[in-house]
Length: 68
Image (cartoon, rainbow, N blue to C red):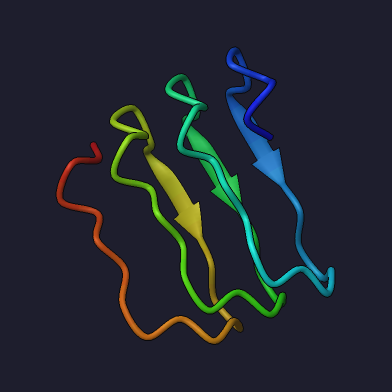
């Protein structure tokens, strides 16, 4: 996703993905990555992020202090 700098909405639910890099998607406002195999998700650079659903993954920590 790093080559899509103007990406505002991303929905990639129900896939067997283990990693997801959205660090270069600074315009991202909504991220839906439900029911994957993610063990970590870094959204610290996504300051405009308003909607996030990352349930049903293997996340143990999620820092959203920089997000709206």
